[in-house]
Amino acid sequence: MLTLYGDGIHDDTRALQERIDGAGCELALPAPKVRYRISAPLELPSRFRLTLPRFAEIWLAPGSNCVMLKNKTQIDHANRGSGGIFDYVNAFSPDAFCEDIEVSGGIWNANNLGQAPNPMLIPLGDGNYTWGAAPKPRLSDAGDGSYDYTGFIFLFYAVRGLRLSSMTLKDPVTFAVMLDRVSDFTVDHITFDFNYGNPRACNMDGIHLNGGCCRGYIADLKGACFDDLVALNADEGIGSPIHDIVIRGIHAEDCHSAVRLLSANHAVRNVHISDVFGTFFQYAIGLTRFYESKDRGLLENITLENLFVSKAPKLPVYNHNFPGEWQYAVIHADSRLSIRNLRISNLHRREQVTPLPTLYFSSDTVIERLFLENITTENLTGGGTMPLLENHAELRGFHAAALYEDGKPFIPAL
Image: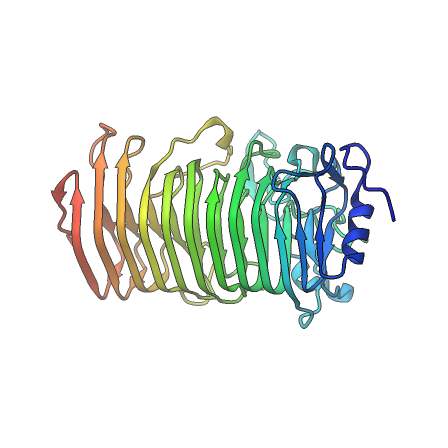
């Protein structure tokens, strides 16, 4: 068996993979002397559990330009895409699902300043950047050139039964965790330790769900991310509905945003978000469309409750350098959405930074049933009015109770 050094100097990739492949159904790694150094993805098979001591560090060597951990899935090289961070969607056989994978423990350090720059940014040549999928070199994250460079820490695709627990995710180039077509999953007790951007602190989601994810429980997330701490983006990756998701317990200060729901051509349904604490400079909860759609994005049966949130200043680390940047209300709904059954309750905002509205619903959006209950706001900015609700949407059913703006009852003017 290959020597497992754990000294942070020797490359442990092959030794770790050898132990995974030979362990049967479970591998408990010992604490390293310093840290485990890897330079290629570790791959986990079905019905497998990998555990590490809680604070054992796994470090991605400079220039590796790969994910750190992924599931083993059958690769269909003939159908791999032509570019972009979601190329893996066509690189796998559509029927090749993995089942029952668990990972717990560890500090997974992607060493983002040592990797290639964010592949979702296009430099404009004047120090600014714009979003896009500019042609990128195929920087292999599988040892065979099969994939474009993504900048993720974890990539799990086509998995039934996944648990990620009790770990720290540190300094990705883009997303810490990418889930696509993952069902019956739990992600809990996660700490985000994001310190730098390469080249800017942006596109750095925490837990990012693409289309096809369902029956998931996400809980106890701590630490600020440089984009959406949790994203449910039905029109990305495989592109299909996301449904039956519980998100509970987010604690973050000076964070971009807590949760984003994105629907353009595919629905997001049956989502319960609760117990969110912290300050967020973009929005706390975003109900968004973003992409062009055949009709309207569809969000259905969305519950937001127990939110203790306010705005954060844009700190220097968030210096994105994008022309025309803006900020949103604490809870923001885009245009061209159909929203069925939206309940917002026990929302309390004590604002000291930016007096933007607490709730903002854009024009050309239809909300079929809106329930607002027990919402209080307190404007301590000294900067003018701070509307509890600014509504431009079409409300087809509305119920409100116990709404207070600066200690006074708030009566919506609809």
